[in-house]
Amino acid sequence: MPGSHYQVPSSKFHHSTYSLTDSSENGPEDEEADGSPRLTPLQKLTTSMCKDENTIKELIIGRRVGFYKVRGEIGCGTFSRVKLAFHALTKDKVALKILDKTRLDSQAQRLLSREISSMEVLRHPNVVCLYEVVEMPSRLYLVLEYAGGGDLHNRICNEGKLSDNASKITFAQILSAIKYMHSINVIHRDLKAENVLFTSCGCVKVADFGFSTQIPNRNDALDTFCGSPPYAAPELFKDECYQGPPVDVWAMGVLLFFMVTGTMPFRAETMGKLRRCIIDAAYTVPPWVPGPCQRLIKGILKTSPADRYAVDQMLGCDWLLPVEFPWSLVPSEPTSSLQSLIDSEPWGLEEEEEEVRSSLEELGITEEHLRNNQLKDSRSPITGVYRILLHQAQKRRGCDSPPVVRGMVRDPKREGLRAYRGLRHTSKLCVLS
Ligand code: ADE
Image 1 (cartoon, rainbow, N blue to C red):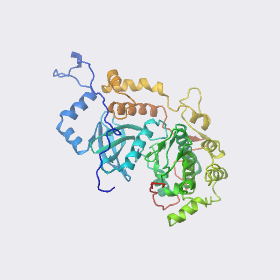
Image 2: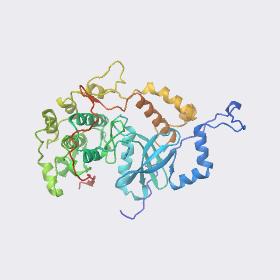
Image 3: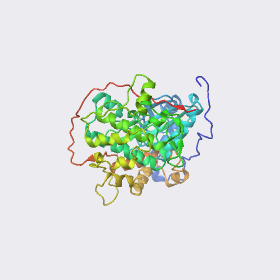
Image 4: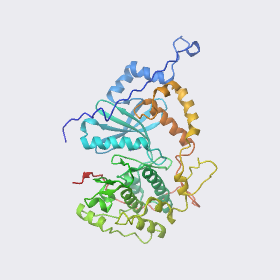
């Protein structure tokens, strides 16, 4: 309701009780030359946040949020803005999604709650990572992994369709992310090119879980129309309940068509005509699209969800056969099939723990801090540091490297630059009556 002011119920968006102190005492070897105690980076930061006039001013005016120094805006949505920020201790870049709690109606609050819960359970190299949640009286900040390579929509609008190899590499990563999400019963419900981000090294990160939901059983019926109409599956226009996974699969078919052709499969001047096109699955794949890719598109864009390819059928398709993921963090397997790598744990967790512990120690974060802070609690700044350092360690191990296509020689020059002038697709949400 425009103009009305809500306080987000504290039961939903609680402040957590975390501790930034430990019981260690400074010994003489921990002293500066002038006899004052030598402070750890963490102690220096927390001291300046309490005592330094400039730092306090920055915290008040929003130039700092928790442990983060805030910079310019990098995006905006219906209820949020996204700004670039840096962690004051680790210096890592992050994306700060800022939500004005006073502008959220009860439905937006519910969606935000779901966005946070979905992101809290998601850990995958192709899904934007949630590092921390910072809550202020009127604002909520989601501290997210930064993907600095732009989004797929802008890439195609500016540079034209992707080459066949680039499409395979991009699509395989989206597929990997979706297979993982569905395996833990998270349905994205707003897959579109604007929500497919790239890191600076070309790794895909699926973003924006604002319409996502985690359901008890994967095939439970859903009844909320979410997402962007050009990506919406036919069953979403039928005022009936629908199953989650086929809706994400359909959107992936639209994405794939967009990647390989630079145009959208369903276009119309009015919503009514668009709806008709989608319900009739009235699209034409250009004849120059390679046969294996055409077959994949046709297997996905099937009107009936029951006939539509399942994620595993997509994984096994001919078009993706030559794709190899580099996550061979899985010991003794140099590179293996897409399916087996996706099924295995891509994060080599234990190996990184030690590395992270020693970096934490250098910053002044002790075992006691870790014991006092539930590292699963996103509302603790200690969790934020921990997750950022863990991600750094994983990136050093190649977790954020995109897959390769067997036999492909990388061409630094981009090809197929066909201009595409399209509108950004805005997400619409309405509840079926
Ligand atoms: N815009 C929205 N989310 C982003 C992210 N995680 N990284 C970079 N830009 C973004």
